[in-house]
Length: 382
Ligand code: FAD
Ligand code: DHB
Image 1 (cartoon, helix red, strand yellow):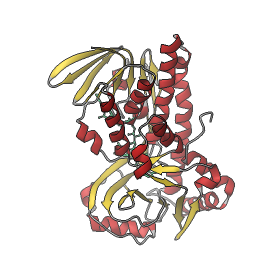
Image 2 (cartoon, rainbow, N blue to C red; image 1 turned 135 degrees about the vertical axis):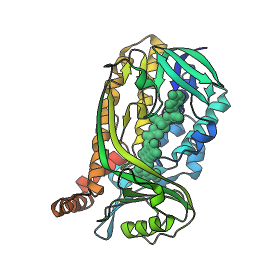
Image 3 (tube, helix red, strand yellow; image 1 turned 90 degrees about the vertical axis):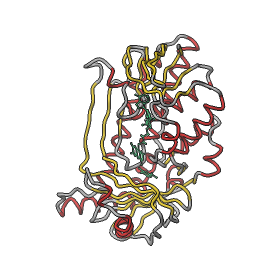
């Protein structure tokens, strides 16, 4: 089998890339190791930056998002027992859309299937040899020859791991926190997202629909979700969030470690890395999915220029262009994480400093604008 662009992974990065290429008439094949049901059921991020939502609209997969997604004009930061609203729209002229990642993935898969273009589930790529992808589908090993490979296979993917030793460098940081997340059938306790800093640790109130909430608690890394029966989770959430949360059936519960990783360059020859395959950000600030989409926008533009007029220039600039944004987003996610989490060994001085930071961010328009412009999505040129 042969194609122009072989895409490894049907997460947001791979699916958005395929859609952008489809629009430009460039053929691609997506190989995804998991089943369609698994990919569509995986609960992850939920906040779409202004530009991400606009892109989904622009290429015709935004209808359900516009109907079911929730446009939020602000977020709340809570500390010292009081809530402080950051008015995103007033400060930036932009909003965010709360719509689950797996809903975005479902919409993109439906659009791909409707176009009748190749998207193979249960097709695990086992080796990337230059521009040849080796994969196993229905027990048979096959090969896909490509002009270019897009490694959109997430943080445990095979593409980056297949690159020759020394081809790329990794910069990493582990955080001494993890997030215990639940999805529950319960009414939202606030119309907007609430990020809470509390002596007992960070908590986040988010939602998927007005009847389904997504809630997170800071826990130590390596925490076993079984140590957190539902009753304990609801009590802890109420304490840290200071909200009258109504409990309901817990539909999903998991613990996610918090890490920062950057791989560079994000390209080796004709192999390009995008999304979590190239970088991971800690989730505070909701950037992972949005950053994946930002990468493939740059990649699609470069591939389109290449097939249109043979130009190499944007392909050559791909890694540098993406990494500029990646480091800005790492900076923001790191700052939000440090401001809102409670380190285990924290001294009273550190605690006071965090409160002062929060008071400044919510009290000064200049500081609030800094948070807001990053939260809704940085402009391309920054
Ligand atoms: P992924 O979504 O990981 O997609 C990669 C795809 O490649 C997967 O479908 C995988 O099955 C496939 N794949 C892997 N290996 C192979 C192979 N060898 N062959 C073929 N296919 C392969 N971000 C936030 O902003 N907020 C959150 O709350 C949040 N929660 C998260 C919770 C978890 C548990 C995780 C893991 C991530 C979370 N993130 C969150 C991050 C966000 O979801 C990711 O940044 C986003 O999914 C990145 O998209 P992607 O397409 O690059 O990678
Ligand atoms: C969600 C996740 C985040 O990491 C965040 O900062 C805000 C919301 C969510 O899953 O809804």
